[in-house]
Length: 230
Image 1 (tube, rainbow, N blue to C red):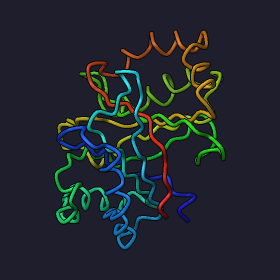
Image 2: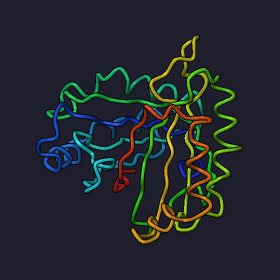
Image 3: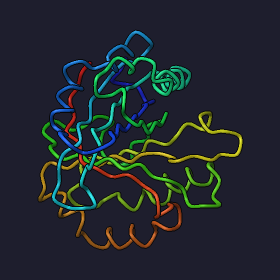
């Protein structure tokens, strides 16, 4: 069942420029080629539509959003990622054909809260992260989940924190990668998000620990509004 799926493919969609962001998002909704992935094993598809924000750090710029599809097993997830990476199904789309895709095939690891968003949550942030240089994939994934991830537990405001760790089978032999995973955080409102951002000692503990597992020179972050397609 899709509700139990623990594998997620994420395709962050960037266009050549940020003109007409909402118009291009509407074109994505109107004729969405990612829907066709249902015929290839996708059990769930959610459009994560990028939201404008006044903060320069969170500004979506030319980022349309993230197409997210779920699968029930690793083999299907890898196949879906390969199909997305091939881009053939995007060639006829008036907007997406020119897009840059940042693609990850991942396994979901819930750290805080349920596997699916609590009803009523309004704010969702999505991060793509890269491991610290010199760190193996195995060491990074273990540290991120069992050390850094635990620093979020008990923090105020956040109702859900999900890690999506890149599938080891999707790496080349030298383990090189643009990104090594994604993190997703949900909040019921902006006040709750501010409580998380300022809550101590959680904020300081997380900040101090970041260089132990992440490459702080790399990363993508943006807010999304989710639209469940199937």
